[in-house]
Length: 114
Length: 112
Image (tube, rainbow over the protein chains, first blue to last red):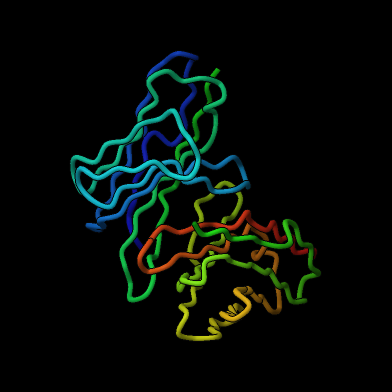
């Protein structure tokens, strides 16, 4: 199984604060993703990257931004957090295996904005 | 783009009985269909996947079937156990796109 590390795992911050969620993977996967998920609900793709210096917006509009300067690192930043940003953020990476694109998830970062 | 629909949204099954979750997809070019299990408070984890060159795949108590003509695929869990309780997500993608589209999830509860 892929090793994907997310920090912080849990964070409570005040409205208007800037926050960066860190994500690193040690498997050398080219593709990385950020999903937003409320507990037990749908997985919404908000950002993805197919390699260094490549980033794309996902299916769900998000006020967050991402960068991909190194293959193993894919941080997500909120410049000014709001209560509506309260959610779980899941980082993921993938490698191609024959036909298909197996995705491995990190343990998630739970963000609460008060 | 791809659209994946998943049914039912919730499912309760007596322990020992079978559970079936169904998904349909819209893009006939899709050729990879994984299933993820997400236990309470944990990350989604891949439990089984199927590619378009086969119609069925089994792994112990879990099986997945694919009907390319009808554009639907299903997850079958036999002899259900309490640890099968979780949210299950289906997904689909095509080789060119490489971006998974997830279904809306099914909350499976196994009743002891």
